[in-house]
Image (cartoon, one colour):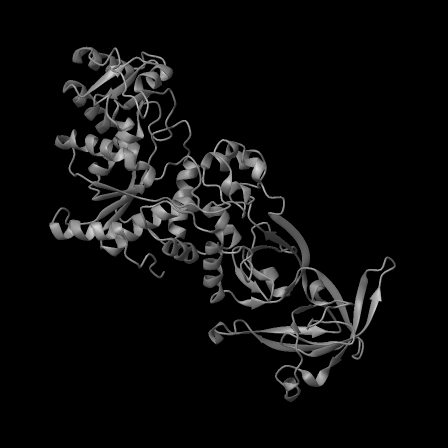
Length: 557
């Protein structure tokens, strides 16, 4: 796979300086997803940055699952995340790890902190803790239990581990500074009581470390050089450094945390909680619904790994927050598929055409290229007979000026075949079109001497005698434009912003060869867009998802 993120960025410049100064001798990164849901496009910026940085510097990248909240985690998500990373073309060269691998070490460090007067067992409940914490403009207040004797805190902490206390009654807090201007440094909680069976450690633990405690310890234990994360963790960096520095005697490394802006995308939900709401409420067919921003949904829709990597490259790595237009992602998909997807013909809104100047059993076999720019992709045989299907939009009885498709008394060329002329329109009882009668100029066959006769319009078609019926699912964005400007409070009900045009189902006809394609195979349906075969397909009824149109349906702002 071609390398993306080829342009330099401030993180790589910082790494270059660290290597030149001798601060680090080898680059070692990690990708630390939480296994509580499926990965979406918003995770790709960090994922690609972590893995690609290791590749760029000949280093290692670990995959470490942040499994510190057993109430929301599942092995289903673990396997899905591993599959998504592999699909994107990466592998955890530094090894596969879990935060739970380090629970014993975290506990050992926690006891060490208590013994050194750096942590204490607190008994404030959530509301009291919030009250004592203060605000952005007022300092916090010390807990009444902040100065309890070390021996007492140590005894209580051990009894917390033994399961003697109820959830929410006690926490272990680091003793830092309740007057700090950084709220994260105001005696943050390091452990809480949680009676949940862990999917890896079972019932061994009933106290679990908080992310801000377990994460830097995991980084340091694994010898991570650069801990890259999104910008919302910038205010957590002093705590990250504090944890590492005050555990240095028990840790082999001192990682450097660097933050960058997260990926934001127009008309796209980037919250697992909101996405779960859509799935559980039945507003989408599942986590792999092609309208979902999950990597599974994008893969099912036909997006390619390289298109996603190219998109992240175009977005770039920066410090300032920004919002990328969904049109940019679609353009990357089109650009990548343009050179890869074979060309075929399919009709989404079929209208029958009958050739009146050939016998009933007339048939011809035509040779068509699979890709105009890639002869190595070969050719295919396509038959044509007396009856064909054309796109409904390719015929008008009362056309405007400069309409170059089929019209009464008008001529068009059938793609790769013949020139035809509309002689008569046969209507149904209610005034609709039953079929169109045309004459076919047999001397105009593509590849013959008569093919040089020029007409202004060329349309696609499928042979009615051997085509296959298929279902086309035309996807648009799941969210309306109002989602981008809505207030955070309004966004809590994500269903208010669902577009009623995000899915249109049409039943048409396609070349018969598309029946035997495998789910995941992607084609360009001439003049209709890029389509990917869906797993819902059967042996007799193929289903194709529109991956992308041939041109952007959204103006780039």
